[in-house]
Amino acid sequence: MRLALRQLEGRSAGYYLLLAALIALTALGLGAAWAMEHHGHIITGMNNQIVWGLPHVFAVFLVVAASGALNIASMSSVFGKTSYKPLAPLSGLLAIALLLGGLAVLMLDLGRADRLIVAMTHYNFKSIFAWNVILYSGFMGLVVAYLWTMMEARMNKFSGQAGLAAFIWRLLLTTGTGSIFGFLVGRQAFGSALLGPMFIVFSLSYGLAVFMLILFAISKGSQRALDPAMQDRLARLLAIFVSSAAYFVLVYHLTNLYFAKQHGLERFVLIDGGIYTNLFWLGQIGLGSVLPLVLLLNPSSRQSRTALVIAALLVIAGGMAQMYVTIIGSQAYPIEIFPDYQVSSSFGDGVVAPYTPRLPELLLGLGGFAMVGVIVLLALKWLAFIPQRLDSFPSDQLKHPATQSNT
Image 1 (tube, rainbow, N blue to C red):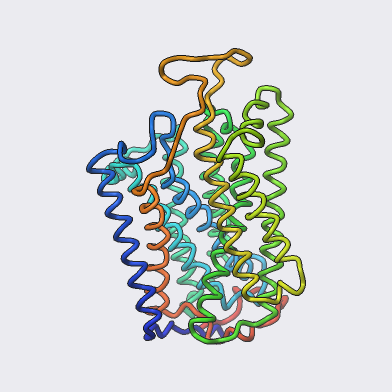
Image 2 (spheres, rainbow, N blue to C red):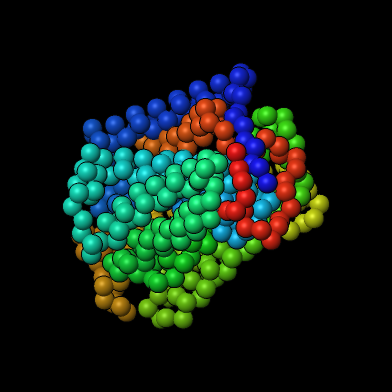
């Protein structure tokens, strides 16, 4: 099978309007980061208890989705599903763009992005944050090498090995991201070994949802029909990933309910946590799991492009709600230093920490999403990442795609 790729023409007014809007939103995000650095985090809703605010919700979502965006490439090179091979370069591009957008928000939210050089040159291997610096940079390098083996005919023979290395590394990366929270014992909801594998499953659904939206947008923008069989495959795959994510969430909360010391936390999240309870049930479970599954498992709606776009958007919205509850809700819940005792002080011990996101935080987070869009739009116009044909894909073969010739 010869892999024929093409560039996005990008000559229409719609393309340039979208690109201009995304660049403007990216500029607003950079302006918000400058304001936060200049005036301090006092202009945000963050405080001594909530030190990771809304920008971290955007950043972690993008980083986790970056791993999952490589799903399609892994399906072709690692699992031998030839039908996904024409979409593999687009999958790799999206993984790089999402990671860059997430890391940009993460670094700018820290207030002193220039001190990243310290983290890169002075490693504390007892810190999970130091591990993640290696994981992120390694993932970026491996995906670039993977793209090279896919798109350069002379390097095709190494595509399988590069794909396997990228697949293993993405599992390590997402485990490391989840372990940032899983290794923290200073918060009641963190310090759980389940968070590492749970973030892996989250990445599968988030990344595929983003990939589907980009693919559908390319199909509509270039006025080329997408193969119904491929559309159905993607819908079924997303349904499997969403179901798996919901299963891990169920296991996580059942595990917490089993331990008496976690009953207060579970009551806070599931019953009387205010916005966090609403986001959990309405956002994460309702919008992010139940409704997408209804659309994805219904044969009639699965054939509708509009229904699949809605399902992908709902998965992304549910993922954002999940990250908000996981990151911010876990910080808002008071630390139980003395179980079975009520604790109070002038510092706010024993009290749910208040937090209201402010405009600079929202703009910074949206700027990260916009940055992803700018990278993807420019890359699609300058380089050949799109399959020559979207209306027909090869059937799966026993022959491993790494042994096939590409151009």
